[in-house]
Length: 260
Ligand code: CO8
Image (spheres, helix red, strand yellow):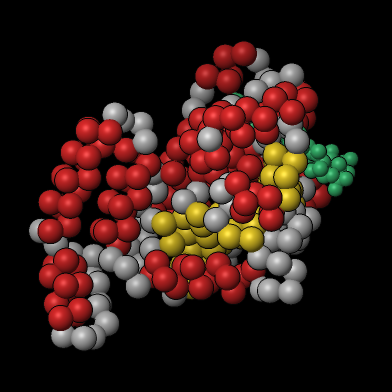
């Protein structure tokens, strides 16, 4: 039974599917929905059988139209200081699992920021990405100013943020905001399953440490980040999975990783 009201969850062969489901407001993210996303991510995080989390939305109209603007209207300055949406998205970025955003329709403001907190983004033919916060007299405050610049570069990020323009999935792929663009004639769910399938073949410890070396490395100077990479490698060198992966290659068979 689904314990949530605004999100649906499903576990399938090592993949945790989290589907945003508040279509009447284009999956706008209010506090109740954010709490449910938080709980669902926690559920996936604590499940040893899960290696990949895919975040998507019901329908093709919208991935998420951002923070709930009616709730935003009521907010006082100090409420912007609590971890809130920014804290949740950092949790998603720091997840031990690989994360994929499957974006169909509008990914705006906090919706775009949610997609950017994921490791990989897949854009459908109706995808529209944008950070329109300045239109509301606020700024992207759920990691958007930082992640957008890190993903597509400072100049392009400033253009997106200052103009508030929307770009489609093809353009998002061209500038590196989306890793993949899936045209109308192709099946976007299949594409997500295909990418997840590649990740599922890897060892969970290596998945976790590789993504953290990339994410955390971005916040460090290069030589410290290189040291983090070395230390992470030392950790995986001590695992049974490393012995299995290298041995499987030598024995010309598929590796079977056991998270040990
Ligand atoms: N919040 C609340 N309600 C929304 C939102 C939203 N973000 N987006 C859409 N809705 C509602 C509409 O009000 C409308 O409700 P109703 O039927 O009762 O009038 C319903 O959803 C359908 O919307 P539209 O009729 O506008 O549907 P369209 O398909 O024509 O357009 C759009 C869809 C383009 C998504 C349009 O609704 C839109 O522009 N929405 C707002 C997008 C936006 O500005 N997002 C940024 C929000 S700010 C943000 O995300 C900040 C994040 C950081 C916060 C940090 C806090 C500390």
